[in-house]
Image (cartoon, rainbow, N blue to C red; front, side, top):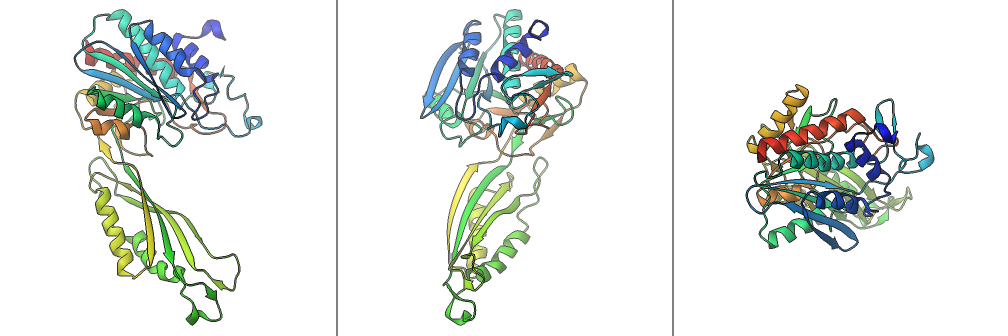
Length: 379
């Protein structure tokens, strides 16, 4: 198999062999750093807590195009459930199999090889190229990209454009790019009552009964209409826990976990105020803990989006779709710096699944798309 591999596929298989289950890196970053330093990148290794990160940059001035991504992968589950061992990559019937093939070691390989090819052709390119790589994207995301961005901000280093290698494609590589993401605001709601015997409800106060009308109103509330780029804001309950397990005991407390995925039409503060107004209206006795995972962000048509769209068109003939669907990504930490951010990567059909795999030719194609994007922005 090795003799037939393209440079992209060779690097992708080398990265997949590393057992970099979050937050471990297991040598992936050093492999990338060695390749990047060989073509003129200057590297800063940045370890925060138990997380390895690095920032590598080539060039001294001008607009800065950064590639961002992560070397960590999600756990495999029982490896016996995989057709092939998850950390022993194989190409079978044109598909590269292995944990991280799609999310996102394949993209990392494409980025590195695209830069090698581009610099070989344009050693005196305009501007700067950088890599922002973490091993904390699949985990809590506390000591990864967010910390590197803080470090960059302290040095007044600003990214002009950023391509995040998350698997954005749906049916064929390049058919969808993400030019934004919804915000994510979670909450843990604890409603207090008085425990008692179900036969004597007048001596108790059932918090589930008190909460039910308020929860029904929250679920039915029309939060916004979305906009050209975002669907309407979504409210979803993910967990409800209350009671002792006995059938004859009124619970003393009920806990509800819920989440908003919200558009740029709303702010975190507006969502909090409207939620609390509904709870207060129903005279619910509650404690509420809010958890903001990320603000919504949007990169409209401009230098970066146009360059990526044009590169995809030239390489594949596709008219790519701009989308803000899906969950959060590390782009949420980069966009607030003022950078234009897009996510472009391979097909996402098997990410986080048993038998994760990606078309080998798609990775070669993605390498060429990244290289064409570099040419459009820095030549």
